[in-house]
Amino acid sequence: MLKKIKVAPLAEESFGVRSMCTYIETSDVKILLDAGASLAPNRFRYSPHPREYQAIAECRERISKAAEKADIITISHYHFDHHTPSYTDWFCNWSSAEVAKKIYEGKLVLVKSYRSMVNFSQRRRGWMFKKTGGSYAERLEIADSRTFEFGNTKLKFSDPVFHGSENSALGWVLLIAIECSDEKVLFASDVQGPMYTPTLDMILAEKPQLVIMGGPPTYLAGFRVKEEHVKQGMQNLESLVKKVPTTILEHHTLRDGEWRNLSQPIFDAASEIGHKVVTAAEFAGKENNLLEFRRRQLFENEPPSPEFKKWMKLPRQKRKLIRPPV
Image 1 (cartoon, rainbow, N blue to C red):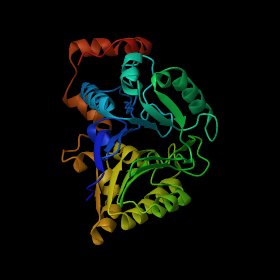
Image 2 (tube, helix red, strand yellow; image 1 turned 90 degrees about the vertical axis):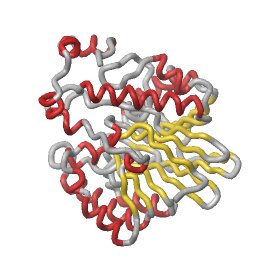
Image 3 (tube, rainbow, N blue to C red; image 1 turned 180 degrees about the vertical axis):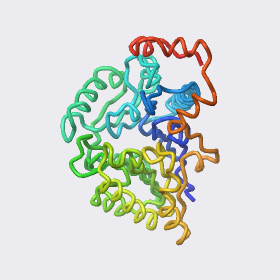
Image 4 (cartoon, helix red, strand yellow; image 1 turned 135 degrees about the horizontal axis):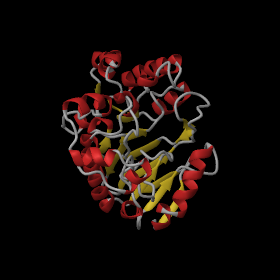
């Protein structure tokens, strides 16, 4: 295992929220990757359960504490589960101007460009971030295709890669490689497997010992994502785990109630050659706390309090402004 690079997952699907936020530390620098967390506003026609709000509150607390220590905050792209907006939204993002300020104030913030290789919604969100949360930074820098050195540690950002399949309407993200001496960790948010084989080639060319991978959205296959794209993502993921000693599998894949069965070929492929595939919770020595795909079951088996039910009846805009009673 890694000795020079400390890896600490903070907020992930296996912790009960939508996120891939990870804290990385070497002897030279402390880095907070993609400091955001969200809940799905609607799943199975249910809004988030109190257990999910408890999970996001706990994740936000971990993110806040890690931000206090961090020298650098990164943003791989501008979805709200990967950065924290400065507006008040307790309904989905557990965010506010104060929450964002605590994360980004006084830091070197290295971000995906919002001017090039970006879709419309992320261009707008990136511009807003620069004016709000990013304004608290000691320095805000575009990171696309750049490498930053801190002593013996290198922080390398890729050219923009597709958010999933080729020419995805969801835009582009940055891969982030953290290298210290002879060790390397690669953070691959929202590449979904990766679905796009040239992205797989880029990852493998880095020869990391550990990859933190956002898996394919199997729960959307044949609905919002083409079956063949999900299949390609799973095939590429199987190829990846054969080459990388340890893979943390997270994000979209873990939103599927059948994720473990669907991913079994990937676990088998890694196991056959002595490699490991784990969730972020398992990597951290914790039990998985998968909540989103259990939402209907949670409401049936753990009915919310009368106070929470009353809050749920408020218009969505009011729910954003008022913390849920959990």
